Length: 206
Image 1 (cartoon, helix red, strand yellow):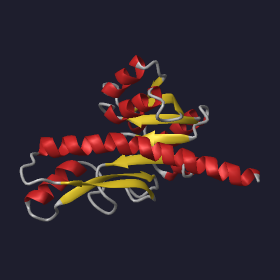
Image 2 (cartoon, one colour; image 1 turned 90 degrees about the horizontal axis):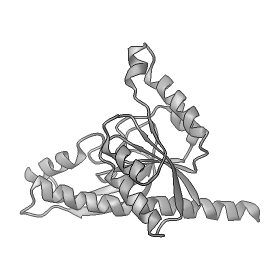
Image 3 (cartoon, rainbow, N blue to C red; image 1 turned 90 degrees about the vertical axis):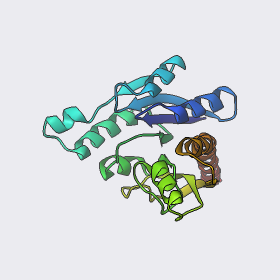
Image 4 (cartoon, helix red, strand yellow; image 1 turned 135 degrees about the vertical axis):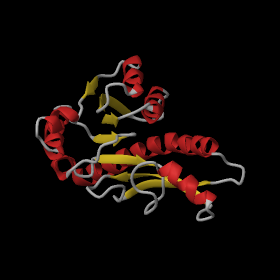
């Protein structure tokens, strides 16, 4: 069973997708901690309702105290190591990790991004894709889950899926279609990581 730490900054709908998949027996995993860098993130309430441990850890006290993002990352990484996670899932986590964090969890951090590889890296990807569609630049976007590296949204892709843009789409209808895809792919990506980890362990035992 995979031990998951899930990092959120907002509503936590993708966290909920993971909670539901675990409760329904679709995913052999346990969420051992939910981390948020925003106190008001509704995902924390979702976690509490599911009986999960939560941890609020904001960046602001570090920056106001003259400490760097890298120092914040190092402290958070040390805290998370105590939970012995097999995988750290960034599900709407609005903070770019530095090597101080990522080097301690090599190929153990994955991120869900609402765009395809090489497109719309960074924030507001759904809005930017919709704007590009309105200007006739694209006819589809998509969702990917990838391993996290210091370069934003550029790590090795675990799973991806195209999402079409329709002529009568509004931003709301397109976003809803994207979110439905996100909820499926984040579960699939965790499953694939677990299957790959198990196969590696089986090979090492031989």
